[in-house]
Image (cartoon, rainbow, N blue to C red):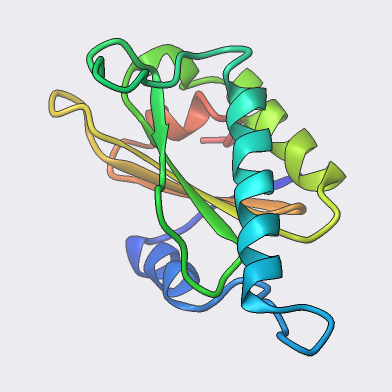
Length: 146
Protein backbone atom coordinates (compact mmCIF):
# COMPACT_ATOMS: atom_id res chain seq x y z
CA UNK A 1 0.00 0.00 0.00
CA UNK A 2 1.42 3.39 -1.00
CA UNK A 3 1.54 6.17 1.59
CA UNK A 4 1.31 9.77 0.38
CA UNK A 5 1.63 12.85 2.54
CA UNK A 6 -0.73 15.49 1.14
CA UNK A 7 -2.07 18.92 2.01
CA UNK A 8 -5.35 19.31 3.89
CA UNK A 9 -7.17 20.48 0.75
CA UNK A 10 -6.43 17.10 -0.91
CA UNK A 11 -8.02 15.21 2.00
CA UNK A 12 -11.02 17.56 1.75
CA UNK A 13 -11.29 16.91 -2.01
CA UNK A 14 -11.29 13.16 -1.40
CA UNK A 15 -13.99 13.52 1.24
CA UNK A 16 -16.20 15.76 -0.88
CA UNK A 17 -16.56 13.34 -3.76
CA UNK A 18 -18.69 10.25 -3.52
CA UNK A 19 -16.50 7.13 -3.25
CA UNK A 20 -17.66 4.19 -5.37
CA UNK A 21 -21.31 5.24 -5.14
CA UNK A 22 -23.97 2.55 -5.45
CA UNK A 23 -25.68 2.15 -8.79
CA UNK A 24 -29.32 1.62 -8.05
CA UNK A 25 -31.38 -0.56 -10.33
CA UNK A 26 -34.26 -2.96 -10.21
CA UNK A 27 -31.80 -5.56 -8.86
CA UNK A 28 -30.00 -3.28 -6.38
CA UNK A 29 -32.14 -0.87 -4.40
CA UNK A 30 -31.39 1.75 -1.75
CA UNK A 31 -32.48 -0.81 0.81
CA UNK A 32 -29.94 -3.30 -0.60
CA UNK A 33 -27.20 -0.69 -0.35
CA UNK A 34 -28.18 0.21 3.21
CA UNK A 35 -27.96 -3.45 4.19
CA UNK A 36 -24.57 -3.83 2.46
CA UNK A 37 -23.23 -0.64 4.05
CA UNK A 38 -24.16 -1.54 7.62
CA UNK A 39 -22.84 -5.10 7.22
CA UNK A 40 -19.49 -3.74 6.01
CA UNK A 41 -19.52 -1.12 8.79
CA UNK A 42 -20.13 -3.78 11.45
CA UNK A 43 -17.49 -6.07 10.00
CA UNK A 44 -14.90 -3.29 10.17
CA UNK A 45 -15.97 -2.45 13.72
CA UNK A 46 -15.48 -6.08 14.72
CA UNK A 47 -12.02 -6.14 13.10
CA UNK A 48 -10.96 -2.98 14.96
CA UNK A 49 -12.40 -4.33 18.20
CA UNK A 50 -9.55 -6.87 18.17
CA UNK A 51 -7.10 -4.04 19.02
CA UNK A 52 -9.29 -1.32 20.53
CA UNK A 53 -12.48 -0.68 22.47
CA UNK A 54 -15.65 0.59 20.83
CA UNK A 55 -17.97 2.60 23.11
CA UNK A 56 -20.77 0.79 24.89
CA UNK A 57 -24.10 2.67 24.93
CA UNK A 58 -24.26 4.69 28.13
CA UNK A 59 -20.48 4.58 28.66
CA UNK A 60 -18.67 6.69 26.11
CA UNK A 61 -15.66 7.37 28.33
CA UNK A 62 -14.00 4.00 27.83
CA UNK A 63 -13.40 3.77 24.10
CA UNK A 64 -10.51 3.86 21.68
CA UNK A 65 -12.50 4.66 18.55
CA UNK A 66 -15.94 5.59 17.29
CA UNK A 67 -17.46 5.24 13.83
CA UNK A 68 -20.01 7.17 11.82
CA UNK A 69 -23.65 6.44 12.56
CA UNK A 70 -25.08 7.63 9.25
CA UNK A 71 -24.19 7.40 5.58
CA UNK A 72 -24.73 9.00 2.19
CA UNK A 73 -24.68 7.36 -1.24
CA UNK A 74 -20.98 6.58 -0.95
CA UNK A 75 -18.93 3.61 0.15
CA UNK A 76 -17.00 5.59 2.73
CA UNK A 77 -16.72 4.95 6.46
CA UNK A 78 -15.40 7.40 9.07
CA UNK A 79 -13.43 6.46 12.16
CA UNK A 80 -12.53 8.82 14.97
CA UNK A 81 -9.67 7.71 17.20
CA UNK A 82 -10.39 8.64 20.80
CA UNK A 83 -7.12 7.48 22.36
CA UNK A 84 -3.55 7.07 21.11
CA UNK A 85 -3.82 3.28 21.40
CA UNK A 86 -4.58 2.81 17.68
CA UNK A 87 -1.97 5.28 16.40
CA UNK A 88 0.18 2.52 14.87
CA UNK A 89 0.90 0.26 11.92
CA UNK A 90 -1.32 -2.50 13.31
CA UNK A 91 -4.33 -0.21 12.87
CA UNK A 92 -3.33 0.47 9.24
CA UNK A 93 -2.73 -3.26 8.64
CA UNK A 94 -6.20 -4.18 9.92
CA UNK A 95 -7.88 -1.49 7.80
CA UNK A 96 -5.80 -2.45 4.75
CA UNK A 97 -6.63 -6.14 5.11
CA UNK A 98 -10.28 -5.29 5.59
CA UNK A 99 -10.38 -3.13 2.44
CA UNK A 100 -8.50 -5.63 0.28
CA UNK A 101 -10.87 -8.43 1.30
CA UNK A 102 -14.12 -6.45 0.92
CA UNK A 103 -16.31 -7.43 -2.01
CA UNK A 104 -17.08 -3.80 -2.83
CA UNK A 105 -14.43 -1.09 -2.75
CA UNK A 106 -14.72 1.17 0.30
CA UNK A 107 -12.70 4.09 1.63
CA UNK A 108 -11.96 4.86 5.27
CA UNK A 109 -11.50 8.37 6.68
CA UNK A 110 -9.67 8.66 10.00
CA UNK A 111 -9.12 11.57 12.38
CA UNK A 112 -9.02 12.04 16.17
CA UNK A 113 -10.64 14.07 18.94
CA UNK A 114 -7.72 14.52 21.35
CA UNK A 115 -7.46 18.20 22.18
CA UNK A 116 -3.86 17.99 23.37
CA UNK A 117 -2.55 16.54 20.06
CA UNK A 118 -1.98 18.12 16.64
CA UNK A 119 -4.67 17.19 14.15
CA UNK A 120 -4.22 14.58 11.46
CA UNK A 121 -6.38 13.10 8.74
CA UNK A 122 -6.03 9.83 6.88
CA UNK A 123 -7.94 8.74 3.78
CA UNK A 124 -7.42 5.04 3.10
CA UNK A 125 -8.33 3.03 0.00
CA UNK A 126 -7.35 -0.48 -1.13
CA UNK A 127 -4.17 0.83 -2.71
CA UNK A 128 -3.22 4.09 -0.98
CA UNK A 129 -3.11 5.88 2.33
CA UNK A 130 -3.27 9.67 2.07
CA UNK A 131 -2.22 11.54 5.18
CA UNK A 132 -2.13 15.10 6.42
CA UNK A 133 -0.83 16.57 9.66
CA UNK A 134 0.94 19.74 10.68
CA UNK A 135 3.19 17.43 12.72
CA UNK A 136 4.53 14.87 10.24
CA UNK A 137 5.92 12.72 13.08
CA UNK A 138 2.35 11.60 13.79
CA UNK A 139 2.07 10.25 10.24
CA UNK A 140 5.22 8.20 10.84
CA UNK A 141 3.28 6.16 13.41
CA UNK A 142 1.00 5.04 10.55
CA UNK A 143 3.83 3.99 8.24
CA UNK A 144 4.53 7.22 6.36
CA UNK A 145 8.16 7.97 5.52
CA UNK A 146 9.05 11.35 6.90
